[in-house]
Image (cartoon, rainbow, N blue to C red; front, top):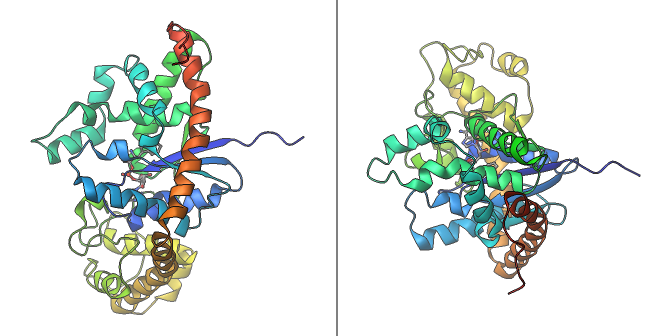
Length: 336
Ligand code: TYM
């Protein structure tokens, strides 16, 4: 008999439109790993409300994001795809884990410090305990691997620390998860400012490409991308951050190595290079946009996917939650 497959959990917040950064840093790997692992891919709407959201927009983006997961090549038959708020066990485990997480640990989270600076008028408790909910997401399903971009590494590490602490107090309960970070594209930078991350919270302007952007907008953003005063396509993150970022994107879109790219553009100007990167992204995203538009016409189908996904996820989650409740000393729940 074959050994059981290892498990993957990952998710993205529907707090903005999906970006090329999330695609290259996370979703591309999700698609690549779906054959080899048992995977759960979640739309983490509960994480999204740590920053104020427009309710109607959040609802729309949640469905659009699920449609984009499928359009990017995730198979809803093989993977469990669902919406976080449909499985209450995430919030339930999060409460318990919060009692095994230290104030000091959470205070050190880079993303908390960063988000507090950006949302100074709304530094709410959810923003602070965000990594505990993320740990609950991962640990509920006994995930072995968590494919994410570089910025989420610290959160997967704290999930591991919380799991370890709980296991040491109560005996083996949780699998210790590992982050899975791509070798290239772990941190895709803004086209307008290659020193800062491409981010869905900064979607206005030409720095960020979204998966549903139209070809003309994509080409315009790449034509305006910040480079440097040399005219040499060479990978050098420190001294040529803009060009190196474009090379990373081009490599992710075409599968070409950095060496191939340097040879392809040897002796040619940045104009040619930027246009080629733009075209490769247009071609990469064209089928994603078209398939998403199709899927959004069929809301019943999407509802069927997330309903079935939530059912399967809730079944797996209840096994872990029952075990945790028993270990911490809660009286067995009566049927009510
Ligand atoms: P989120 O929603 O900010 O980002 C989603 C995923 O995309 C990656 N990513 C990037 N990778 C490379 N370059 C970029 N510019 C870029 N921008 C985003 C992120 O690293 C992430 O993998 N807390 C998580 C969501 C979450 C989660 C989880 C993830 C909640 N629970 C459990 C994994 C497991 C977040 O805010 O990601």
